[in-house]
Image 1 (cartoon, rainbow, N blue to C red):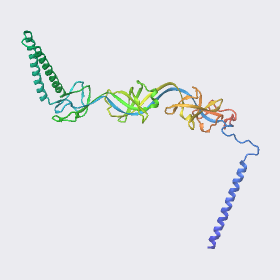
Image 2 (image 1 turned 90 degrees about the vertical axis):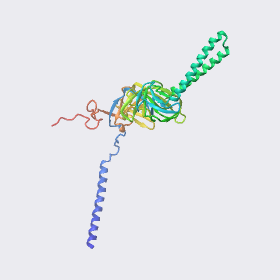
Image 3 (image 1 turned 120 degrees about the horizontal axis):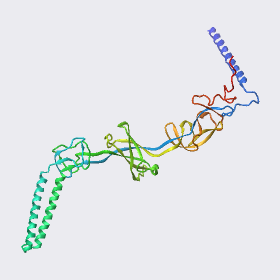
Image 4 (image 1 turned 60 degrees about the vertical axis):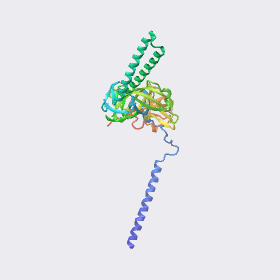
Length: 386
């Protein structure tokens, strides 16, 4: 036991000696590296050494200002095929999904009773017409009075009116397509009894799709019929449909502060269907000579944007106003002119007025190695080897 205690004491003494030795060594190193009294300290913020940076020019390009919104596709014309009068369905002249022409007879209902009524009324009308003609012939010989002629004329007009009403009821028993389009699924079978308002099928004109969507009222001043539009649908990936704005609602929703816009999309292949959920991107403005800079050149400060421009081999911080962001590029609407050189790499090390050393895309100094000692290592000519 005594031997173990002696060993522990020896280990503690050796450890303490090592720690004090390490502290003494650090003190000597700090003294050796400390600057001499009165010596100049290194400049901060790139004042003494040039900061290596990469630059790019302010370019011009085309900027299309867009506004995006989601909307619902609607058919150019759309109705529900339903009977006007009650009756039994006697014939269906379409199949599910058929494309029909305007005026095609889609549904025929049992018309036997109405046909018989029309025939009886037609006979009554013909009889009234003959009686009126006979009375007019007898009035010349005073065999009939004018009052009798007037009475028979009124009876003829009544008969003709009753006949026209029966013929109208007869026509209502044949349902025609009011426009060319595609019918949907039929909801009844032959022999079914239907009442006014019963859904038999639907009819949609999908040659043109109307897309309705809402946009913020902030863009109202730039909305107008004829604006271009691109639309996509989740159900049809990798396909873009183009169209134009045809109408703008007269009212703004007081709750959402949005206004409804309607656009028309040609649909010659019938790919788009009514009710589809679509994403619309509308072109509000197109600028062909917009100023563009790389997005990495921006130096944001609060709600303001700055960039460094190169002026006489020094970086100068200038405030700019930006517009649209275009996938790696930013539109500049104020603060810069075309052709100016701006810093795009090395921005984090810069301060306003700092000296800079412009590097190429490969990291080499532009124009060859810098002369003098301002460029860091390798600034002066090297002696010949050997």
